[in-house]
Image (cartoon, rainbow, N blue to C red):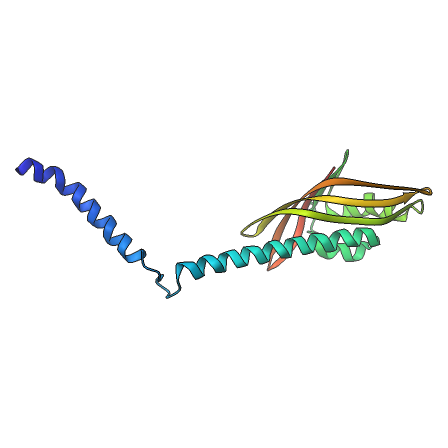
Length: 174
C-alpha cells in the first residue's frame, strides 16, 4: 500500500496542478476581463484590416505605374540604400534609386510605350507582425510602337510596417 501511494503521489500532484491551471484559464474571461472570443475576434479583425491595408497599398502602387508617376511611387517603398529590391524578368535592381533611375525613368520616358492598364489583383496576402507578403496577378495592357498588346503576369511582394505604415521592401514580377 505504501508503494502504491508513492507511485500515485507524483502523477496525482501533476493532475491536480494541471487541473487548477486549467480551471483558472478555462472560463470565458481572461485576466483583463475580456473574453477569449472577443480577443480572437479583435486579432482576426486587426489581421483582416492589415491585409486590406497591404492590398490597398499594392493596388495604389500599381495604379501609379500606369500613371508613370515616379514621385508618388516613392511614398510606397523603402527608400534607404538597398532596403528596396526588385527582380523583374531577367533583371534586378537593388535600391529604389537604382530601380527608379535605371529602369523606371527610362521606361516611362519611352514615347513608344504607353500603358493603358497596369493592375495588381487577385491577392493572396499574409500578415505576421510587421511583415507581410502577397502574391498577385498583374493585368497589363499597353501600346508599343503602335501595336496593342495585353498579358497577365505574376508578382510577389514583401512589405514591412514602419511606424504603422506599410512599405514595399521587395517585388518580384515574372
